[in-house]
Image (cartoon, rainbow, N blue to C red):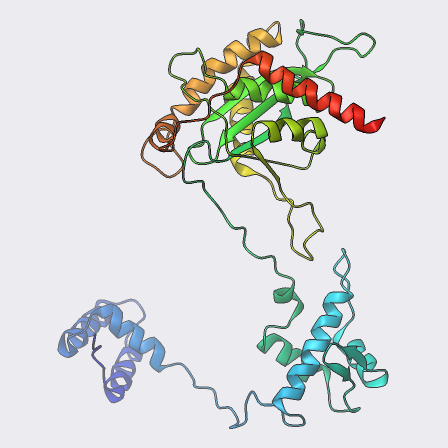
Length: 374
């Protein structure tokens, strides 16, 4: 597309005429509109041309951006070493070796690198020059230590990936828990949750536990994979993968062995500090967000009427989950449960075994674990 150009003399003449008029008057507007119509451009284009024509142009040397004491290759090599020294000496409080100190160490002692020994002659590097090229070439500490963007992913089919996590309920305790271990007091009311990665369908349950209990987690996953008796909640089946954090449940050999028996791939995020400077232990938003929604939209109503037991709390929660899964999908123009039905794989969903068979797998893995200890 060819843009119409306005002559520089015309812009200068127009600016002189505008300078003789008050800043707020009708004549200025009429003059702009007449000039724009004369050259066949819009008023916005004319205003833009006036702004650009008044900008002063910078004058630089012909060798601008090129080192004068050293070659480009040598300067880049020294800057890389200095940038590496800054990163290597950086601590958690953000303190690191300064540019002046790094130059002194290089000139006095040198640095052994994979490409050989580096020691510049004294007086060839200055603070201002090195800082200029560090910023120009992107070797400054801010950009070198900047975190990479988080890569978002979404499964193609339903039940391809489940997010699993648990969180203490804001209710903390119930008056009549389903079980109490003697001598340990009232157990904590914990909210267990799984979220389908593709559709965002959520299934949650309350369990009275003392800490992160593996048996409660296995019972919860069994209920999540089993065909539900509640109308309007067809969510069921064995997933291909479960993604969770590195908590005690994921580290349990019993939990891992049961997942192997069900042919479920257990994936945990990489712990912090295990991938260089990159932050790896990030929050799992797809499963964390339903926790907040349930606690704000459902558990706040417990101020009016608290459930007497965890069984009653699960009945109330199950009714709310029907309402939650009928909400719109995060991207698609339909509900979460409808998205789960639309994207089920062509092959039939893997049905969950009976509770007796599931308990057999759990007892077998526990026995094998005990046998390994002996």
